[in-house]
Image (tube, rainbow, N blue to C red; front, side, top):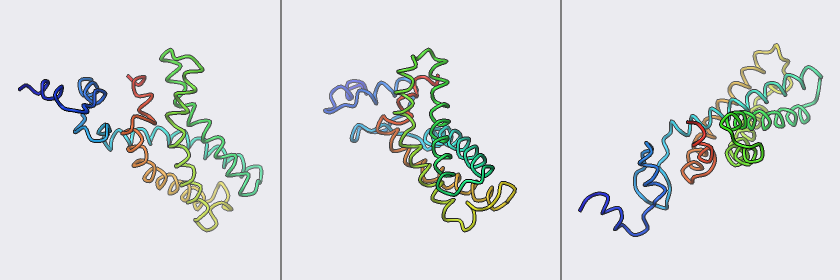
Length: 180
């Protein structure tokens, strides 16, 4: 019996995984209908998210610090801008690919929301946990060192989350077709 015949005789065959295998994606097994997602793919999705979050975090904290804001409004502005830039970095390529604004917004929300939430909780939590980091000025090595460390920790925590989400066909998996 050929491999193809064996696949067709296999009860509960994962047709999406089989189709993806023929499009250059390697999937192993058919357990729970989950696609095998590489750590590299998960890290790439997380790095994409981290880029938007980092732009928003840095810009928000720089603006808030320059204006002399307290910790809570500083974090609020940084989080709002992190979401804005995180979504923007997904929206722009989708729009360039010819996706309508409405569809692009829905795809960006589906692709990035969980990743950005996890990243924001972790990086802001780390910033709050580092003594004096939120009170340090923009010229302080403590501020920038803590922020770099916070973003690194956020990347390390969010990557396995994205791996799991992409394996479920969600998160960045929903925009993967537009990256080619």
